[in-house]
Length: 357
Ligand SMILES: [Zn+2]
Image (cartoon, rainbow, N blue to C red; front, side, top):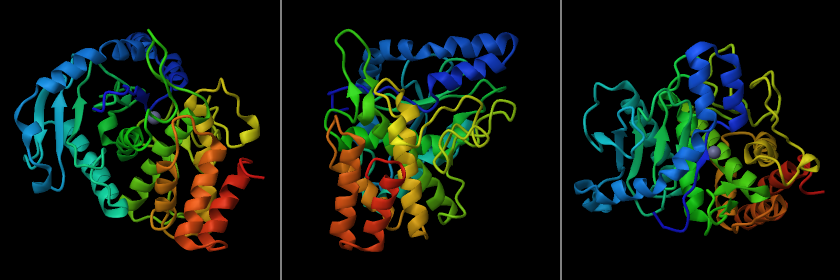
C-alpha cells in the first residue's frame, strides 16, 4: 500500500443494498439491513487490516519477475479480520472451496487482461501480489477494494448470490486498485479529518466509471465479444430476478428495465449535481465510453481501451468530466491522428453526454 489513503470502494451502492433489504423478508431482511451500514465498520477496521497484511510472511518476499501472475485468496472464516487464512496461493491446485477458486480465476482474467492489452503488470504496474478474501462476515452482499486488497462477499443467498463468480464485479474492484495507483491521491477520494475517505464530486464519479468501463472491457475480452455482442451490464450475474437484472448499464444508464427498480444513474452532464453519489453520476462517463465504442465498432479494448486507460492516467485527483474528455480526446489525437475515426468517436461520445458541446 502506498499509505496515502485507504479506498473504500464498494461494487453495490448503498441505495441498492437498501432496495435489496426492502425486498427481502425475515432474517434476510435483517441481515441486509445491517449491511447497509456495514461500510462504516469496514472503514473503522482498516488499521487492523494494515497490520495483519504487513505481518504476513513468506509470499511477500517472492521475486516478482519469476511469476507472470501473483494471486492469493484467503478466507476470513466468517469473521471480519483481514486478510484471514490463506486458501490458495499462485500455482496452488484448486481448493475444495468453490468461491475461493472462482475468485482466483476471475482475478487471473483481470491480471491477464491488463497485462496483454495495456502491458500493465498487476494493480500497481510493478507486479504486486493481488490479495482477496472470501467468506467475509456472514452473508456479506457486496464486494470492495480496501486500498490494499479485495473483499469478495458470499452474498446472502436470497437476494444476492456470491460475488466471486462475477467476473465483472471482480474486475471492477481490481480497477479501483489500478486507478488508486494511476492518480496520485486517488481520483475523487476526499479525506476529511476524523471521517472515512469517500468518493466525491465529478472526480469520484470518474473513479467509479473507470472501474465500470474497465470491467466491461475485461468481460468483453474474456468472452471475445465485439461492441454489438456485448451486454454492457455490470453485476448481471449476482441479483435474484425478483430484485433486478443487473446493477448498472453502460448502454443506457438509469434504465430500470435493464437494471433494478430504483437505478438513478444519469447519462447527461446537464443533470449532474455535486451532491450526487459517485455511482449515480458515473453513468455520464460510462455512456460516453459506450457511445464512442459503438461508433467505432469492433472490439472495445483494441483501440478505444488504450485511449481511455492512457487518458485517465493523465487525470489529477480533482479532475472534472471536462478534464477526462480533453484527456481522452487528446490521447486519441496523438495515438491515431486529428480527424481519425478514433478521435472523432471519442469526441462524439463526450458530446452525446453533453460534457463537450
Ligand atoms: Zn466501485
